[in-house]
Amino acid sequence: MPIKVMPDALASRVAAGEVVERPASVVKELIDNSLDAGASRIDVELEHGGRNLIRVIDDGHGIQADELALAFERFATSKVDESSDLVAIPTLGFRGEALPSIAAVSDITAVSRHVEAQDGAECNVAFGSTPQVIAAGAPTGTSVSVRQLFRNVPARLKFLSSPTAESARVSTLVGQMSLIRSDVKFRLTVDGVVRLNTPGDFDHAAALASVYRVRDISTLINLTPDRDAAFNVSGAIALPSSHFGRRSHITIAVNGRLVHSYRLGYAVERGFQGYLPDRRFPMAVINVIVPLDDVDVNVHPQKTEVRFRREGLAFSVIENTVRSVLASHAPVRQFSEERVASSLTTSLEGAFARRRSLDVMPQIDESEEGSAGDSVGGDSGQPAESRSGDAEAPPRRTTERKAGSQRTSNNTASAGHREVLPQLRVLGQAQQTYIVAEDPSGVFLIDQHAAHERIKFEEIRAKQSAKSSESQLLLDPRVVELSPQRQVVFSEGSQWFKDAGWDIEPFGGNSLMIRAVPQVLAAKAAIDANGAEKALLHILDDISLPDSQSGLPDQMPWSERLLATMACHAAVRAGDTLTIESCEEIVRLLQDCEHPQACPHGRPTMLLLTGEALEREFGRR
Ligand code: ADP
Ligand code: MG
Image 1 (cartoon, protein in one colour):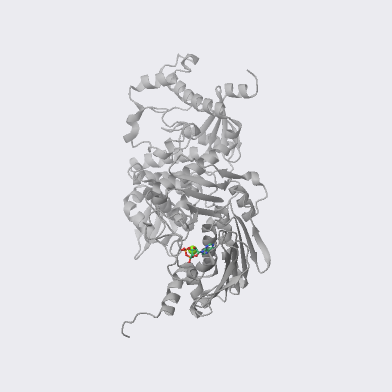
Image 2 (tube, rainbow, N blue to C red):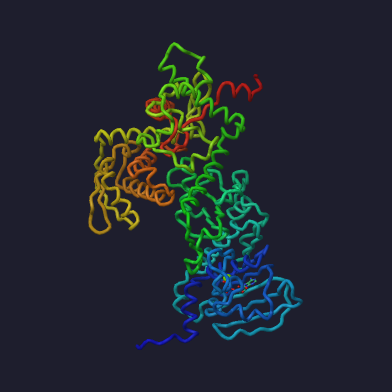
């Protein structure tokens, strides 16, 4: 056929396909419009999975009667004009495409009354016909009804799922939007039954409770945005006692726009790391608030993806916010107020320092207390900063350093000086997460995962540098197909994998064959081909993401990253029940570590409740 310009009707049906894929995409566009109109309540009605009817009613500012027909024209919008540079777009919509796209593939009626108008108007467009406007009585706001969706696009109709499945998609979507916009009251009615009704009281935790039917609202924690920061986070998370087999309970928004971002979702998971069992996912709604000109929202037809100027910053602000909320809600932190918390930190440092000086000068005793800083500095004669090039301890990322009092300092020891733990007597395990131990100075709570991670990290590293990494052959080698992203990661680091004890061969195309796994991974539980595959994929994913996101690629070299993720994989988890013997074993091995007080990611391995702090809390002094 010769080249011909498409007739308008055909062109608009083709264009509609970009925006309107299924009932849920219609609902999304209509809700976006309602939100842009400043609605405080939005009612969504659905019949027969959206094939018969999709209706969205809002109490927003409405549309002037004389503009109603225009709203259905392509590229007609009230949200941007020639003066807009498309760099900083504050509204959800801006393309002027949604209404005409929906109108091209359905019978659509909008009834609206503008806040400043006496009367309303009604406009109907059927499958791209010319808009017909008549006067109509209506409350302030807009109601859009979409009928017979895709009747003129059989291909689309054929690809729709069952009404139940399409309704489910819509419910998920409306749920997510109501989580993000906890200030708006959403109601969803499916075939006459109210499925969702959110309070719209500005409380993200309350929204989570109503969307996911959480009974105990005290397990849901609102995130408090730090208004002074350039990037900050609002939303809510569920404490790690709730977890799920899929990522479906993680909702991410950027400036109130629902986005699909695997990376930012992963930042949430990182924040929960160490708190959840293996391969379990948290419940969270996260709205990252960034300067408008920091994101490009014009990269996806359905606007569900955005591009960041500083994605690493978004990533770390999410991770750190989640982590610090979790840290402040952990049992011990709750007990310890700021005052106690800071005395905990300093006394832990004191305990290390005291012990170190005891090693040097065994005859000196209690008198060293309180002069920790001096004795450390005096011992080594080197500033703590000189550690930064030290390959022995992965430097903590700057973003984590800021957390200040939340965290035990990693810098207690100065260059080249080995940190020595006090001799601890293990009392048992608490919360299936912490080892409880004591020495004369007080009670120690040791995070079993963080501690074991540190142990495994140093063990793997020692073996690797001695070129004695042990491997365990798999009974049946496993062929694994890698996604392009994982291939890239693997090919970058294949030598490191080898050094760490993996035996992996190319197996044609995108596939690899795993013949053997490092002994450390096999030691935790007998590892089979499935386990090996899972471990490899997990490690590849874990290594790759932070690299591009943290913006600090050379701070943690590839080799260290592999070690850290392998250590994480090999370590016991929070939630694993440990016998007293394994607790003692962990403490003993931790005592042999070079840097026992932080895990490879820089989180503390232990907290000390000093005898004095306890006495003070109990009013004994
Ligand atoms: P866009 O949202 O990109 O501007 P749409 O096709 O979705 O394009 O809508 C076109 C215009 O119609 C909007 O710019 C807005 O002025 C108006 N409009 C649509 N829906 C509503 C609504 N629910 N309330 C108020 N105005 C609306
Ligand atoms: Mg719109």
